Amino acid sequence: MSAAGTAEKIKFGTDGWRGIIAQDFTFANVRKVTRAIAAYLEKAYAKDKPVLIAYDPRFLAEEFARTAAEILADLGWSVKMSDRDCPTPTIAYNARELDTAGALMFTASHNPAPYCGIKYIPDYAGPATPEITDTIVANIDSASDAPSEGKNADKISTFDPKPAYVDYLYQLLDVETIRKAKLNVKYDALYSTSRGYLDGILQHCGCQVESFHTWRDVLFGGGMPEPKGEMLVGLVESVKKDNADLGLATDGDSDRFGIVDEKGNVLTPNTILLLLARHLYKNKGQKGAIVRTVATTHLLDSLAEKYGLEIYETAVGFKYVGEKMRETDVLIGGEESGGLSVLGHIPEKDGILADMLVAEAIAYEGKPLSQLVEEAIADAGGPLYNRRLDLHLTEAHKQAVLDAYDKNPPDRVAGIAVAQVGRKDGIKLYLEDGGWVLLRPSGTEPLIRVYMETSTSEKLDKIAAEMEGKINQLA
Image (cartoon, rainbow, N blue to C red; front, side, top):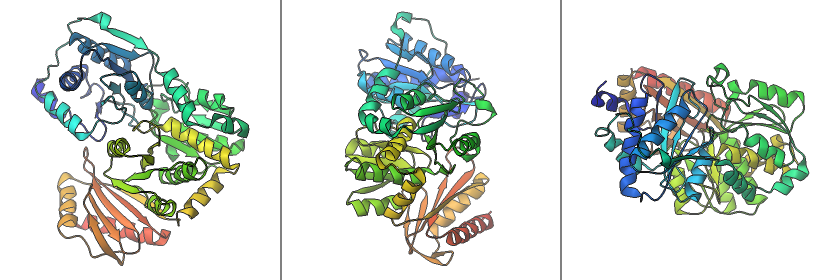
């Protein structure tokens, strides 16, 4: 395949480039993308700074990582590879602490097993901003996919990124308070990079832990490494059966969290953001802005107002949350898709820390997690009801919908007046009663996501039915 042919397939989305292994995520394309990243590094960093490389448990991920290391060594860079599959927040933290030229992480996050991916993490330990990724993408056309020449093999070494990261988490957590609570925790690794990390941290913090799926399986047990309800059935059953205090999980590269309360309810990321914002402010006395993406619950706005904190809304993608974290003190920043970070931590989402902060909140309050959730929602003036529709459309239909709502947004949705229209990321209809609807196109497939939030389940049903009906009429 020609270089031009491969370049057409390589697109950086909200968090790097992902593709199907052996179809478009090939060794040739990995070499090409690595050289494009190296061309950026040449202008941004001196070569006395090492480049870190890590990978998740996917099929061939370590071999892809080794290929990238060989290309970088050819080009004169020193490379430090993780000694096993590694959480994204772990390699990100080390990228900052080791005075590096950043890191390459081979992961497809929560995507199904046939996928792999690569993302570049700059030395500030957060997602690369669009300016950086745009530069890398611009370098792809001229980058070679030729095999490594095998130069400078002595520039490649391995290291263990775990100890420094884990020690840092212990500084952020109140380990003694968690120890005193003697929590009973169930942990489903979902075959992810958090195995050997989260279970060990829980044990260090005095928790009684039962762990599941703590070995490498490149097929993820036939499921997906995504900590959502359908993948957490066994965890829910175990929590309920043994009356555990909570259940914890992460996605494949451990930057997203999954939380089950003592009743077996799988809690939404919106709920956990509220819970932890309240915990950090009320129990730990911390202050700072609250940052959420355009698709995340507005209950965070209510909580910020109650606590006298700034609230910021960003486009979808943690890179925008991370950018705000680098600009100002942020108490908590997060997104409805399951990522968050907190004051004092790296500007990258961290599912391991999120899980431990929930355990810490229970330990501080001495109350069941379900009760803490109710109190956090009440503090924010809730509840509010959320839903997301994923509508698979042809490209033409998708464009027709976006054009229609952009040029002629409705005056009312389900009988509720539209007070304002936002275009920060997609088209957001702010409703007069405090609810909202967001239409946002997928950048990688013929799909429109419709996010909704309102004050009652009945309103939510009406809004969802009307939006789906009107979108179908635009075909």
